Image (cartoon, rainbow, N blue to C red):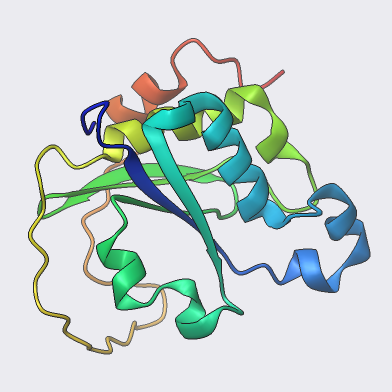
Length: 168
């Protein structure tokens, strides 16, 4: 993790479609799932993190080059799964404990797992960013592109959920 003098720069990204188009989901997540995740990270990490949110409806889908350049850890929520892998010097966690129909991102255990994940994924050293390269890669049905996935359970996920009963 970065030093205590330098807060970890976190961007929480969300499509924000269900929360804005379905009243029953908006009632659960009035500030979006991204808002609930950002709030939880802020509660757990405090001044050790600078947290911003971005959504699909924002300009450049909320992730222009300057935002990405000022982000140490990028979070995006998904549906029920968990996997970690590395890509070059990057660490990637895909952790999805639930669905927008459930208030899972308000649970303290889930917030702690996400805070642990952010700290695990934090850059170990200062990064130098390459010049932007824009490419398009097409997937063939049923195939992943450009990733070597590690089977679950794996040691990183076990460390992140250690001591947290997520099945209560």
